[in-house]
Length: 112
Length: 113
Image (tube, rainbow over all chains, first blue to last red; front, side, top):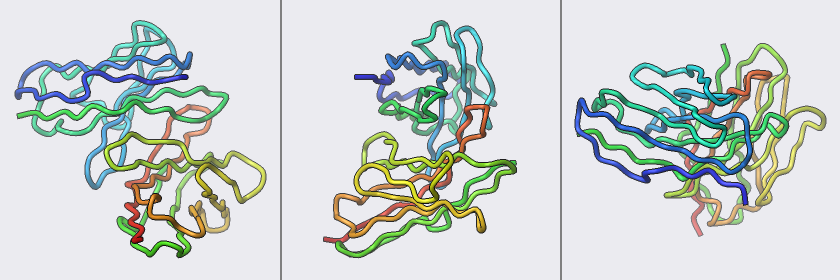
């Protein structure tokens, strides 16, 4: 079964530290996305990618970098984590022919 | 600019009642519209989508949604509601041709047994 796997599932980070969230998909999808979920804001797009070795900015890219080294893998990098980046992060993939997002289980990040 | 509005943050009803969750959108072109559901402690799951064609689209778990171009709405419906429908529901719009998806803030639905 096609799947999107995120790691870690939860993480506690210190302010100013570096955090890397990883995402792996077996859907053979071209598109991958990083969203964050905050109470009162729904899901907001951080970065996305439609091909390996290329990433695009979403609506809220500040403070985040993304990396797509292969079709299957998409990472979100917080170089200097801040308190405001405490949230749940979702990775998703999609096939342009289906227009449907497949989400990972999410990563709960707490920055202290 | 595109946007999705879900005006009701919370909806509560009794099991057996009909449910309707509201969604309105703003988009300059023909929209692709979606509903996703998030059960407590879980990730988001696809429910249904409207791309073109019939205004009423049916999805999983007995849900359907009606696309109304006249008032830019895409409301989610189900009758009767079941306690297991308690979850958070998100309406989304695709930036057509760009594969970008924009989500509303979600509606938390509580169905009382």
